[in-house]
Amino acid sequence: MNYKNKFIDRQVENFPAVVILGGGGYKEIDTYEIIPVARNLNFLSKGYHSFILDYSIGENSSYPNPLIDVYEAIIFIKQKAEEWHINKDKIILIGFSAGAHLAGLCGTQWKLDSFETLLNNKKKNFKPNAMVLCYPITSMELLRKEKGENVGTNWGKILQDNKEKSDVIKSIDQDTIPTFIWHTRTDGVVSSTQSIKMMEKMNEFNIPYESHIFFDGFHGLSTNDTLTNYKFSVQDGYQPINVDKWFELMINWLNKILNY
Image (cartoon, rainbow, N blue to C red; front, side, top):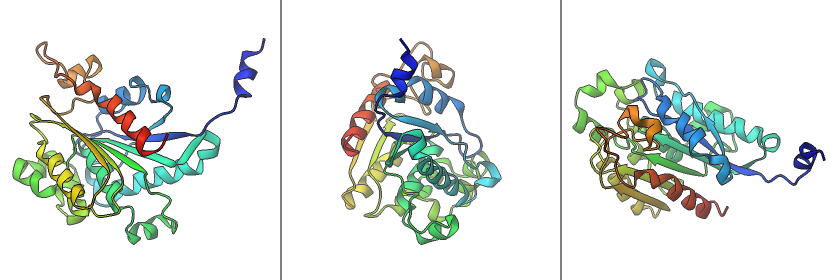
């Protein structure tokens, strides 16, 4: 029996796709927030394609360069949608830390006419349909209060420039896309206040969202398992409780939001 042909002949569904944006302060892109997420959380078993994007970092990360990278990736994925069996109306951004900042900007600024011009795309078919923000940077003002001058030395250009357009919270309006957001209460690098303030602003505009502030945990937990131990997911034998549940919570929420 030719199993290969039987598989190919089956009706193939068009699946949602997630674009994963690792953190790293726009100075680098941390592999521990992309490889374990893409491969080991097994999006495919949940019916989702997954993509990893290397966006502009360092001096090349001046606004709006990283956003252009994301929007061009979305356009490319949609162009390949039929070939790759992707539902082009179900494209999700998943970002971690600085990558979540980038996802947040893309999820709030897609409607700006300037991007139609920059991308030569009048149909705004670079709009993502939902975003997942994992311990995100959302406010430049808060970041400077928390980090002071360190922002200038430890972060990439887009965070150094302090432009208002680089502020996720200030970009939130009625056109912000549905959002799943999570943080840990004891994050010592990007405080949970960043997520809480974003939730408050989304409430003002009645944006659909789900949020989870977990009891404790370090910054950069990623999958919160032994795969990311070297980035303090497990330190001195201690692993923060419940944080690893974010993936299943996210999938349930996405299925609801996307009617999938």
